[in-house]
Image (cartoon, rainbow over all chains, first blue to last red; front, side, top):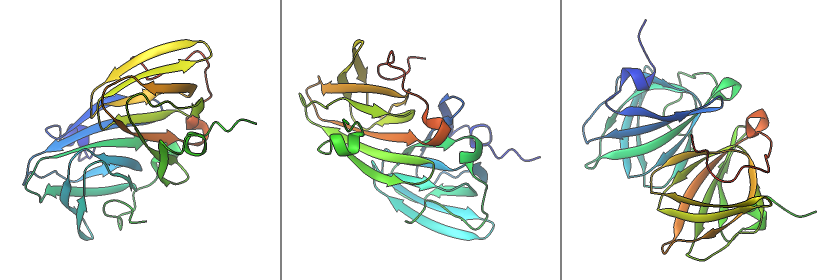
Length: 115
Length: 115
């Protein structure tokens, strides 16, 4: 079975900051051009600490996402892989929700909610 | 009845970034010396975007909290007021949890979890 938890499947980029019964908080960091293997996100809030230029890919397609630093966005539960398409390192915090709030992966969803 | 929702009771500092059934995400910003009136936080994750030097006060006592930028900490449900005791503006994001995950205010708790 393929490991799709980003902390264990992509440990060079993801680390757990803390975890309790309600949330798991991850720190994500990369350099331009670096990629992730396909991994799962439960419903999460992502907070950008830097500019964020990224191509996200799922089985159904790609999406280019561009955010500035200090934005907070909703990430619906999804499975994707990514690449830093920018010219600077990416640094973000992900607040993953647990339990029923974690949601169910929708294979048609890529990246942050747009509304 | 006193309004203890920080978005409506302290609108000069708190604004809602987005809200859905699982979370409400707040942006907090202030200048050195500025204060908040007593307000409630449900269980939340706070992400610092700047240094964070703050005295938090409850009915039971005070606590000085010092954080650096880009930290993520757990804020157990609590009621407090605060003052920016630093020499620079504060900017943070708060991810408030809803439903059972929001927890119940414990009047003995002040500030971030220490473990």
